[in-house]
Length: 563
Image 1 (cartoon, rainbow, N blue to C red):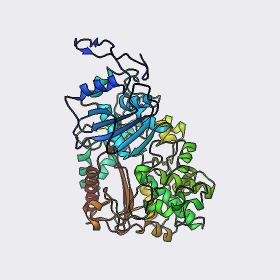
Image 2: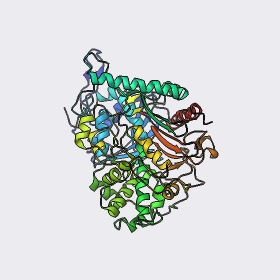
Image 3: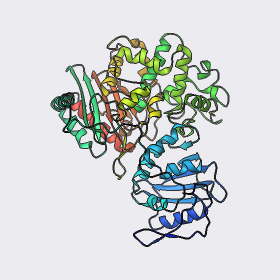
Image 4: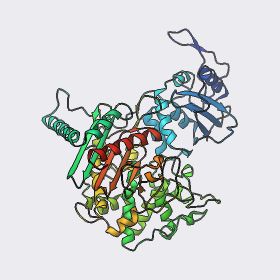
């Protein structure tokens, strides 16, 4: 087969499609003039909706002669309809990918695993609203319009169809199979008993959760601690990945709930007199200077009010970046010259906590993941949680790790491999890829609710807990309903309106916690003596996610008599 960059004569004879007799043009190099004409013909009948389509710009770093260097892709996420064009983009697209032609072929035509792996190494740069990439992945995997299947037939040098195995093991068998062991049967019975207990204590909550199964999420894991009633329960529902039941011991990814653990590390170093949250990062990382970097403070990072907006995040293109690449990207990050820190919310899911991890390492000497394990997880009694998996742990659990499924927007639910490949599980991604059961995450927030006293030791002084969870960012609201914020913690802000409700309409305004990229949520309400940790492995759009999370939170308060 011809390579992507191979020359195919423009007058190459068409070939007959087997079984249909319809002439199919001979394969052409991706983004060549002939390929773009074929793509226009293929997509002409069902063009994407111009109002709702996501605009993706592709900058090709090695476009051979006769092929476009810049391509605009219009992608209608609900229908899967596509349109390709070269030339002037006009208004800047929501996403811009800079990559090679071969990588562009993988992005458009490769399977889900290969697509994810593109963002785990150097060579791909992404600017814009990264969250769109998740939903583009679902659209490209499902190809509901059939456009990609038709274009595959006219494109030279494509990667083979079919999923690349993310690991070498077969799917973990369900306990209900004929040859299940006694241990597996006992595990299944324990899980069913936990569900029966949860049904008795939280009937309304379980009803809301079950209504979401199969609609917005294939599975869920929930942990609840209520001091006054003595309630302490953990329950799992549905599947964590196709054919694998969710259990209470499963290790879902916490996404941005991981940031709270890093914030506690900052609090500990603050207690030890090793850092000042108001100081610039360069006071602890001398290499983080130049191009405005010296103006970035730890306070800005913790409150997400720095001068570097999410769309300029230097680590967007490499989610599971190797350490050397990560540091180089941070060294060359440029703060916009007209930026005014503290005047707007600039949520930094990647680079802010990479910097915090570097500060922890510089001041303590231990790597960030070791520090968190020894100084935060251990005193909280979070024995099952992993800041990062070792390669052996990944191989032993890869067939049972919960996958994130894309849902919402009118398209079917789709399992994806974002943050589930070996690189993204075994390379530390500070503030993002901690994995552990929700019962462990509940232990963390319970320790904070108890003034910093964990199950196996003290984590923070009570004064430091109050300092971290107090309102520091006040008066700012963004389009996602983010409002008041502490130092690494989200504050309940329902007093600012429905869109700013973080956890429940019934939560006290002293409630603090965090969200995890439209999947996870954890919080502590000191006034109610309540801790909740929840993971839904179905990621959906912001509005739908907020609606379901508030419905679950409200049901919890009602079930426990806290309304």
